[in-house]
Amino acid sequence: MLAIIDYDAGNTYNLKKAFDYLQLETVLTADKAVIEQCQGIVLPGVGAFAPAIANLQATGLDQIIKQQVKAGKPLLGICLGMQLLFDSSTEYGWHQGLGLIPGQVVAFENRPGFKVPQMGWNQNELLQSQNPFTFLADEYTYFVHSYYANCDPQYIITQVDYAIKVPAMVKCGKIYGTQFHPEKSGQVGLQVLATFAKKVVTSA
Amino acid sequence: MLAKRIIPCLDVDAGRVKKGVNFVNLKDVGDPAEIAANYQQQGADELVFLDITATNEQRRTMVEVVEKVSRQVFMPLTVGGGITSVAQIQALLKAGADKVSLNSAAVADPQLITAGAKKFGNQCIVVAIDVKINPQTGQPMVYTHGGQQATNLEAVAWAKKVVALGAGELLVTSMDQDGTKNGFAIELYQKLAAAIDVPIIASGGAGKIQDFIDVFQQAEVDGALAASVFHYGELTIPEVKQRLKAAGVSVRC
Image (cartoon, each protein chain N blue to C red):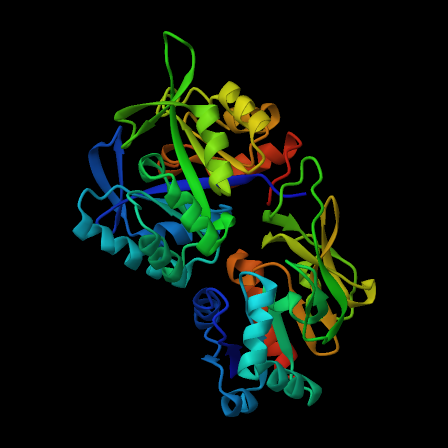
């Protein structure tokens, strides 16, 4: 069973539907006991960084997530949920993140021909081969975002080219994150969710 | 580099996909979820559902359609047709839509664009613009109500205005080209792309593969939408994408 963290941060139903389609058990929850019983955690998120982290802090979910990850439980952050894993973000001010992966979330600079947000399908370039997600090499996944994670290449599994190199999937121990929306990325996106549930979580 | 998008459009009436010629002789062509799943299989990059239901009563079924489609289809979904309020936008997004498309309501109540963008983000709000060239002046003019009602809005000026109000994407249909299968209105998209900096989806006129190649090579559009050529199997998405790729257009295939 995977816990999809329910903290009023955008549409989590589409993510739940994708897991349902794959016949993988998930529960939408903000309950500490339920999260503790689950074998893995999924942190979704759509919208702005500041209200999302404030919400996690106000509900104590930030501490629960940190404790669980520290105890070795695998986690998958998606879109804003991935950005929250980093140290900080500069979206509308400076905000502290969960600090689970070293790096900062920063805004795209406006460059001619590259509209912000990046919205659409972009092609993954594989940087690391020692992980269960190497099938992402050269595959297109679906992005909608105006900020990106600036982090050391050692944490980057795949990146996409959008005037600059943008981390698309990141990893730090058993903590994973996708900037793209696997639940909107067709077959390969479903494969990301299935791989996290079946390979990362069950082997943890 | 983002892939150029190929977007089939499905007309939905009372919960079923319908197809007619110029909105008459509507034929039932099937279940939206089944047809959407088939397009996903073919490699469509996004789907647009256009609610052509005439009555408000039946309009509620669109939320159920989106709910059902999004249980089986995992790609971006845009829903348009008859949306007039933030509450309707919210219901569609919650049901599983990623974007909503505003057309007549955007002209009648431009603040709806801003209200939607503020609450859900610019990326959720698409403004659909139906354009017809005025034969006297040569100016591209905006039409509403499924193309039946003329306005005094010039298309490029209106496009700039809706982007300023918060539209994150424009879906622009050339009524002059729509249904002709003579190719997209390239000159119109060139003018629009020079004036605005949000993604533009070209619609109306797709008949052969070269039409897709031409619009992507000659105008800065991000996607091309088509209905009948895909519905009737005259073209398949894989063959369109293969030819685009061979022509040097960046596509997902």
